Image 1 (cartoon, rainbow, N blue to C red):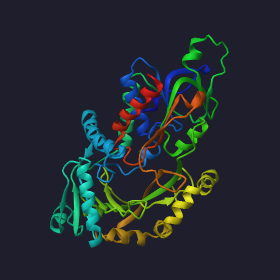
Image 2: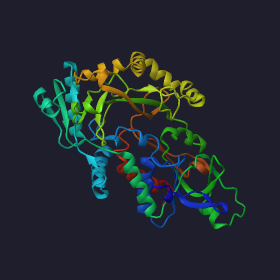
Image 3: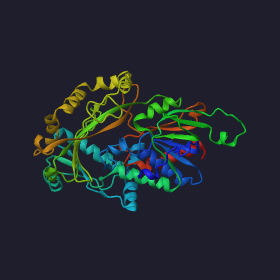
Image 4: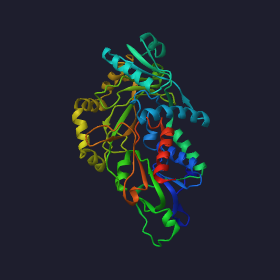
Length: 434
């Protein structure tokens, strides 16, 4: 989104106060999709999106794998399963309407060990229950027809899986929102939300826009209601507003490797492992990108900074927040060997490549380079369980009753963004009586 069409609170005469019916905090893909949906449903209301960075989609939305997921993995009947299948269809349709390039390159979930086959078959049944289009189980010969360099005993073929640049999608949502009359305020890091101290109780504006939202730089807007879609900071915003600190966000960094360009012929579509229910994360996979590169990974290690994309990034506050949370220790103690393995692989290139060679034996350490990283906002409960589904909540009290927090929007949130937006908008309409 060109900076020229982003609005700042600073004007030639200094600061000005602005009032909105609903302020959406967070210009990631979920916040922008929700803002877009709300303004389309309620064109007569004034909406703002508040973003602490200089541009939208700066964190999770701009640092993800770019996969359009088909909805195979998720528990049948869960919000995640339903919204992913709906969201993938809406995502393809939206990209077609807007001319955003994507590739429906498919995905193979490959069993390389005999004990993975029953889990693969169960995954196939789950995908059918979730109404994922086009699924089929294939054998070694068909695997090689689709992925000539991949070896496996059996695979689940998902032709409906695709890839797209989600930053481009998010920026398109931002344009839709602004063209419909919405305001995006960048460089506005929300640090405080409180009820206005009424100077004149009969003031209509005071009644209509009673919540003051303040930025780190001391700028203020007033609004009627607030929707937060703050990803890595969702728990902190909830606390600022006087709502529950649970579930807590613990950041996990995922580091990718990249295949050297001359080796990209080794991979055609997405190649994924069969997930192991004993471990909290999915494991290494092969992901083609829209620019033609192939990403390999990611691993999953505790990030010592919520927006720490480099191996040695460190924030004392974020680190203390994570390590003093009992839920994290319960998760760690249940997964000690897995966690140590991930940590070792974070530093050892050859250990990562060994994971990849289970699927494509031709890959060597000479064929890969260290690539980009993302940080996943993993919601954890106090028992150390990964919160697997979407969590929306509000609170009590003057401010809390005027807020809807999107507390957890895990992968496949980018795929599901338009479907999530419809669910958030319906919930906001119900709570805020829009």
